[in-house]
Image 1 (cartoon, rainbow, N blue to C red):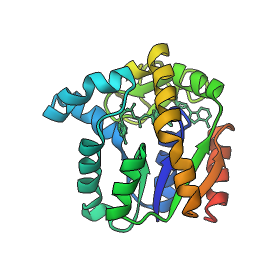
Image 2 (cartoon, protein in one colour):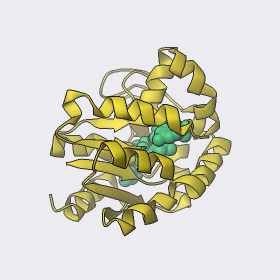
Image 3 (cartoon, protein in one colour):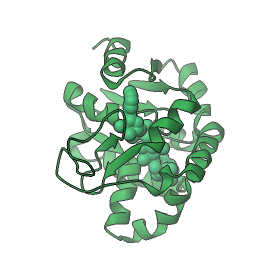
Length: 209
Ligand code: AP5
């Protein structure tokens, strides 16, 4: 199954994708994770996008589309995928339609107040990217990733100013994708407000899994 996970920053797309890959047996492809890995590796792409990610703005469409086109051409994505964080603009959605036909677009619906609470308390593993939360999904050992033992840190774009910027960018550039995909009959709405297990249940029911 070829899926897009759509929703505001902090809706829980990455958390849900980590659970959904074991149900669907498809790769989780997160453009945010790809950019953060490039930054950690200090690659030319990473050097180019670091300031953009830290500020909460979007990377340019051309670079992002090229990256996703290459990633979807790999063997492991031929049977399906979960695209998390792409597309994020109408030009990205139009470009994607030209090189891959998605089956469903899952729209994770959540109010701004919950976004602020989730992102304000998020801690991310510097090594494997797994997300935790200081209240909702606490690691077993403070500051240490349960999955790989890596160090947990606060993303630069999870600071108050950057969160507000990301919400503004989402409203202006990404939210129009809801109507874009609804008119094409691809959109499935999932209430992302409950606890993770309940959202997984909502997701599997909505997709008839
Ligand atoms: P990206 O990494 O994609 O950021 P995002 O879309 O803002 O999404 P997040 O990772 O912040 O949130 P999420 O919805 O995955 O929530 P999570 O599961 O972590 O992109 C980062 C940046 O990269 C962008 O700002 C941009 O600069 C660039 N970029 C990426 N893609 C791009 C593109 N296509 N075009 C241009 N630029 C691009 O959950 C959040 C927290 O809540 C966690 O702590 C988690 O533990 C907790 N949580 C999750 N679910 C629940 C729940 N049900 N109940 C309680 N807590 C929960």
